[in-house]
Image 1 (cartoon, rainbow, N blue to C red):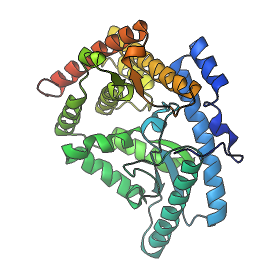
Image 2 (image 1 turned 60 degrees about the vertical axis):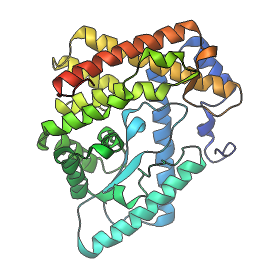
Image 3 (image 1 turned 45 degrees about the horizontal axis):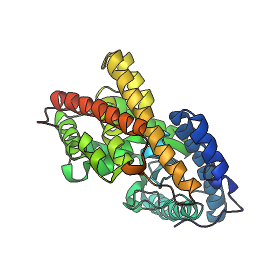
Length: 329
């Protein structure tokens, strides 16, 4: 569900016009540059929404930070995206804490609804700032990450994994930096967390067999790539948010070799470009953008590139399976 172009936020249609779609398709703009730019525009829209909602809600009772998570946190948003965000409050207690939680939960809900109105779908899983679970003081956020790492529950590991992509968007960056510092340097990770998280990606293990089906979910193919690179970055204390930044950091820290890094970067660019072109083609046909590639109408080069991407992801999954003690990942 998407409303007509908003007169208040005309930029939301920037990437959904036929003219811009054709430019992206014909000139094959670097896909990671495109996703970074889309994410930057999304940040500006989110900041404007927050300005409006705060002006309506009154002065915030304490310091806070609005964070983006998931693909927005990695600055890898495409033409089809939903919301993944949260609010970090400064630590307070008593009446001030009750007042702050009430204010910011209401603020988060307003922001989520306004972003939904201008084209950023609500998260189906409720991983948004208006959810009381994700609108908490800094100390609670630290406890969340501690529990996720020290007492991992395999059933919801993939759902909470997007929070490890968090990035500052609005408010006091000191709160965001404090949480990042805690996760990178102060939080003691456990082998059992990495084992369970790596094992959770087994069900996403791609195979060339999927290319013989009628359609392919491009997003599902790339999920273990971004997910396992995130896992390795957490293991080795890489502070970068983007998948490219994480791969570069892993290489510079001698955690992966040059050939492996290049293979994964190439796979990421290929699958992201195909994903964007699928969405662009949807737009030029007057449809909503989606992540589904119809194999019968795909050009042979794209199918070949997907096959190459699958090989690179399988190599990454084999490496993770060996290093994190997962049988046949």
